[in-house]
Length: 515
Image 1 (cartoon, rainbow, N blue to C red):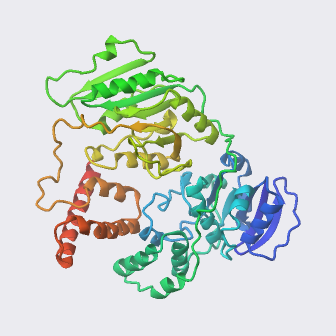
Image 2 (image 1 turned 180 degrees about the horizontal axis):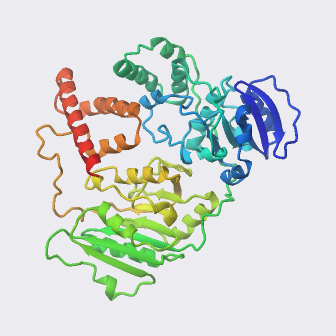
Image 3 (image 1 turned 90 degrees about the horizontal axis):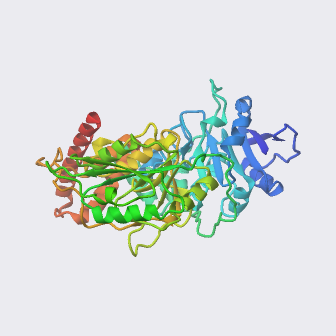
């Protein structure tokens, strides 16, 4: 491991892990020096640290935290990040509103302390200029690298716990913000950023926008990180026992096929927990084959008269006993090596939560690399029971949208990232039968002004996104929804949209208070 100590824009020392000094020319920028060190030591991890907090470096913890080469970790002990919350006007993703108390996925890197493998720097050096601002350079690496499979985190355990000295850290100006958006997003986002700043903050930042147009885009189409071998040193698997949970309603034939697929697995589940729902009074189970046929695993069957997948999955989660939990749907199909192959990838990446590719029939696969996922699949995911101990599906989102994504955010806020595996994949049949036998009564269904968007969608945004992300989402919804509604007069449409948005905010807050 090579350790680079610096004070803001200048390197003060370069040492090895055992504190042996490395002779190095400190005249260039920190970014250019990082690239030179990566070239000189291509097999080493490179750690950077502000000199004011060098005594707080937890070198022993770092050996465990940085458990494979295709990672990038950093942490800012200050409350602010280099890019302030205005970046939320152009990015809706969960990578913006960082939880600094846990290991959290983000491309927002910090110059205060961090670590990367030299092989990553060497792969990206020809596409990323050595910016004078080290924070900008690091964030650019992460922003470009994440869609290519680089796993990037804000990691508080890089530093030993306790009070820290306040260290001066750079903060992006509005000019830098526009430049970053221009270089890392599609061109329309710089104009949308300007529009949102004018609309919500009354800031007419025309000059920063114009100057940003002179910067070249940093495309990732020619960059490939596949040559970097991943083999995690982190042990996350012990017994390799799996319990499967499946909520079902009115899909007995499809569920039978799912059970047959599980029965043919080369690595069999230990137990399958089925929560069958039928809200009709006096109804009986349709799943007689559970008792009639012999299965190579234990089946726990619950028949309830309360409809709702959130409630059903929570009931099932309370029954799990194995080391791992497979969250499945009742209309999946998959091959016999599914579970075994997922565990091979889990061991390789040292992760505790994974979501698989989940295409419908004849649907093309958009993502072909293992990446940090922006949502969570309640019907196609595998997670350690340890990761699931403190999370449950939010009943406030029952019969709505967003319960999967909310569950994933609960996991991340506990320090458990969600990785997407393109292989093996699970086919989602999207069965035409089943669903809700009685139409659920939503709180707002008799409202004279119907909320837009759905209050459950807005509740997710309120719970997990920043204020700027909420406002940016409103702007995008306003623009996209115009062509789908009947009011074509722009002024009348604006007035109606405002009323619908306010009703959605009202009902989302009602759901929040009730949850």
